[in-house]
Length: 346
Image: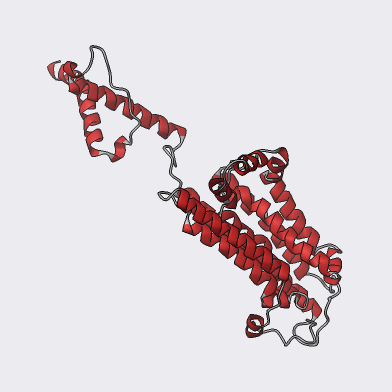
């Protein structure tokens, strides 16, 4: 639909002016159906451990974002308003991909499939092309190059005048976004296991790229590209570019900040034996457990164990267990008793 046929933009008009994209509709519907089929299959095969509803909701929300970005009013006005075009880009590269990754579709496929498909998928995940494409450094470089290359080069003119290139750009954003976020917010069985501090760093490191792109667009003194559909309403072309730069700078930073906070929250809730402890604290607790084992062996008496035997130390949190802490204190009193007695008799 040409811009002359579109009414002046308002969120009411955007909500009512949808465009039908058959390829997007078919692909998202098929992918959603396959995902739901896999979730049901896992629930039937493992009724005690059904597929997470939260992961299913996350994946379906990711598909919904793709539909909204391409077929709702956001997609209808994307050839007419540059700032709307930039909202679409943020949705496709920063919002939809992490939601899809959080849905863990690869893990679902492995749980729902049988041989030979199961074996083929595992072999594919271990192949060197997949290992290279999921390398976190590659994701950062691909993300940065895509943001800068599609907004600050002559590619904008090509995309604005060629529908095939425009549609390919949408696919590029989804693929690059997925590869970037896969090792950072996902838990898929890929070859890279990224620590939470490194995840936070790699999420933070691309924020200057978004900010730089937004600042450059917001500082243009003349339109950097030709509008594909001139209009007689709304902001001027230059004002439109400046608004688009603000969307990339402020909107992109806001989305990344939310993802960083969610990653930090996930890190804080991680459960493992030595979570939150340094090597010194870990060693201290091991030593406490060992001393507690000595105390328990002495209190049990010779009849409860073979001569010379000593209970194997258990790594326990003595600080948070009253019974174990009391036993440890009794052990300390025992070993300090003779010294105290000698001091009193002298």
